[in-house]
Image 1 (cartoon, rainbow, N blue to C red):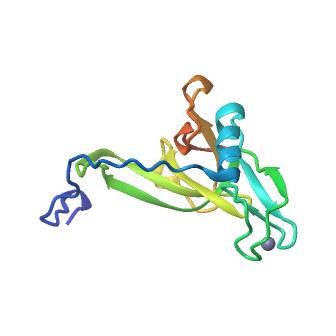
Image 2: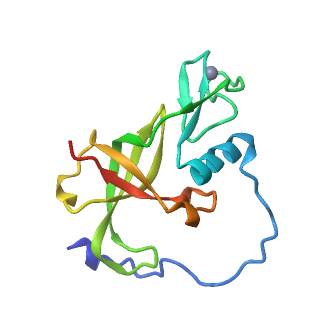
Length: 155
Ligand SMILES: [Zn+2]
């Protein structure tokens, strides 16, 4: 059965409102990470010199040795596809006319997940290099959504 005909017989979501009043902060590392995306169109990680690991997204503490990370590193905007998946059903539960590719791309020792836009979805491979495409500076709001998508670098 084609995936587009898949139906599990129950709704994929429910509509409604929840009165939530909590406010979450990015934390110290997240604040700087998202500010660099918004203001500079750059991706920064944090480095632990004890473990020689660069965390992307930036983290204030090393998850291995629990020490405070000790340097900020510009990891660039080109990364390598670690894995990817194809979506045939949209977020609202309806079939997509064109499947979307969602990729995990390595930056430093971490990675970012976003849509991969390509005119040749059948030729996407693990290990390919991709470039981050940011939204125009005037539209960025300091969130992960400021990253519009990834694009494959044609070498
Ligand atoms: Zn460490």
